[in-house]
Length: 261
Ligand code: COA
Image (cartoon, rainbow, N blue to C red; front, top):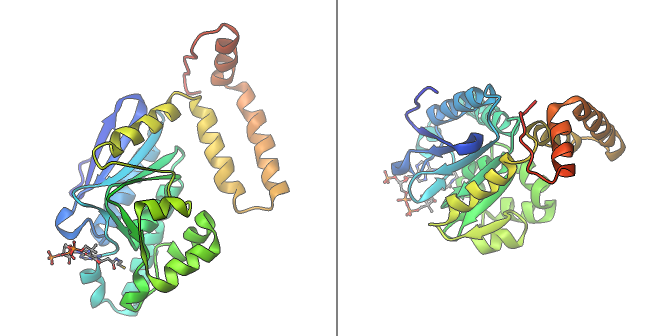
């Protein structure tokens, strides 16, 4: 795996990768370099057939405090459009990873930071986290998917409130409105999230990938059309070793030993 200046990659057992955005002096703000490194790491991970889950977190006291305001300040409108597009490409690449992704939000997740968390399948927060989309306070709007992904995650009324007011929420407030699954102490966050990833990694790997694909694609379709995806994926799994092993192990009252094919 290539080394990246602003992204640390730690490979945990069972095919779990932990990505840490590492630009702590700027609270891990996303500039073009960080975005392109995130995109490159994601592409590399996407080629790893043994990968089971990816965890995203931030170095220091922030997850990501947003897009880099200093870098954006003097951009022309064309440059802003290109930067926005690059942000979207990066979030899409993370969203499109075939395996489950988990945001371990260790501190500030503002603007592009919350948008990054929203491109992950699951969000867990440290009790120190503060989350929000404060862009209107800078005279702009969320530009890396926040106006679209937040409402789809927590409902449009709360999303509109957060976008229109720019309010930031404590971890408990964010959990109450369904933005996060759970809140842990700062020291426990990564261990707890690795535990979730390990549980995922013990399931049938092909089944987990298919489940993610069907749920992601189906979310954008009418339910009856989405159900057709489920029917096809359900049947496709029939001819996998994992399906045979999973059912045989159950009937033999032992743990399955999945080959991931
Ligand atoms: N872009 C660029 N630099 C940022 C940044 C961002 N989004 N967020 C923080 N930084 C930098 C600060 O400029 C500061 O740099 P400096 O030490 O060179 O002055 C450093 O990170 C530490 O931030 P600071 O503001 O001093 O920390 P704080 O604890 O007082 O406040 C925040 C933390 C997160 C509340 C505050 O930094 C903030 O509001 N950041 C911007 C959030 C935002 O609007 N995000 C959306 C951007 S579109």
